[in-house]
Amino acid sequence: MAFSTYDLTVPPLIRGFDVLTTYLDRAAAYAEENKIDPSVLINARLAPDMQPLSAQVQRASDNAKGAIVRLTGVPTPSFPDTETTFDELKARIAKTVALLKELTPAQFEGSESRIVEMRFRGGMQKLSAATYLLQVLLPNFWFHVTTAHDILRHNGLKIGKADYFGKLDFID
Image (cartoon, rainbow, N blue to C red; front, side):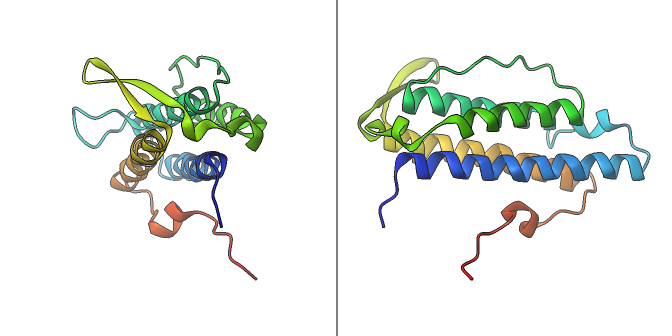
């Protein structure tokens, strides 16, 4: 079975955003149940030099939007990083998922031969689309989902590996 660039990009990103949305729903309920100001969780970070939960969601969104442009050439809107509530973060996820759902496999045709230019360590570097997808996009996207998981878990939310996996598409 062959996988297209679309198959390796859009469905996994949407799946990750589904996981993030579930985390945010559960975090909001956790904050309410435990009388925690939601901003405490939204601004929580694992280390002083790491970005907070809100930025993890924003960077996941930026990664997905960047992938659309780099792999298809389809422009995406800029989203300012102004989200300060769970609902605002969920709205950003929903806008990003809507962009992903508008894409078709045909828009990714030929993307495997694209050259992707990105700024790394202060300079522009060129990558093949495959290198970008497998060594930059997906690892970076899942890094931010994992970091959101870890921030919330560190702050007491009862989530684990099964939550991170989300709904699996089992064969009947």
